[in-house]
Image 1 (cartoon, rainbow, N blue to C red):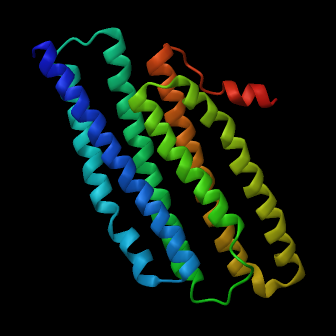
Image 2 (image 1 turned 30 degrees about the vertical axis):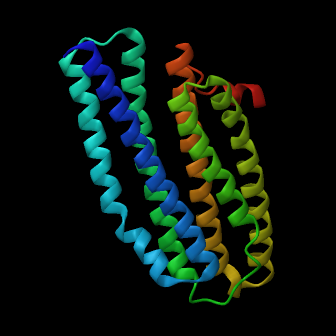
Image 3 (image 1 turned 120 degrees about the vertical axis):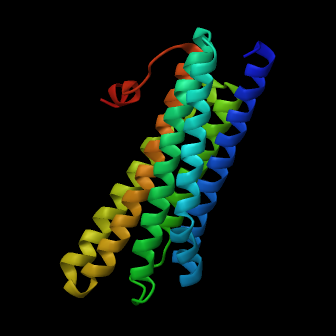
Amino acid sequence: MERYHFEDELQQLKNRLLNMGSLVEQRMHQSIRGLVTRKQDLLMSVVAGDKEINELQIEIDDRCLKLLALQNPMASDLRLITAAMKINADLERIGDQAVNIAEYSLRLINLPLLKPLIDIPRIAEMAEAMVRESLDAFVRKDASLARNILQRDDDVDDIKNQLFRELLTYMMADPSTIERALELILISRSIERIADHATNIAEDVVFVVEAKDVRHHHEETRR
């Protein structure tokens, strides 16, 4: 494979990853909107759309494997392709979490509202921005932006933990709230996991740009 053709294939790979990112971000947004507006059809469309994401994941992995097989990549190219495969897997798991949120919400929207939905849309918006910006950092090879995303994971965790404590208080005070509170806890946990996957992508960006493995380093800083 000629070098110019290889560069073109790399660009197409990036484009497909961006398509994947846009798709999972859309699914996540729809799942939260379906919860807030209590629209069953919107939530069902998220569940039905999982097949499209899975098929795109397989296509992107195939592109990566062909690039590795058809030319001996330079070290920087090798880092980019292997990171693309890991990012692809994280995006697919974000899609899975969006489906989980939709399924939890489908059970919740037929029950009376437990409390105003403020915290969940808030952390969902934060996690969504982390996903979007981690992909921007990948395309732009912006390690500074990636490192900023690593720090924001704590903010999502803090709000989720605060919400958990509040919902636990509801359950202890009134057992009739347990089912609704548990669904909200599961939804907040899925959002937290989406933020974790965005953090993984940001770590991969730092690896691509700086050839540094920063996994777990932000955890050590917290300790």
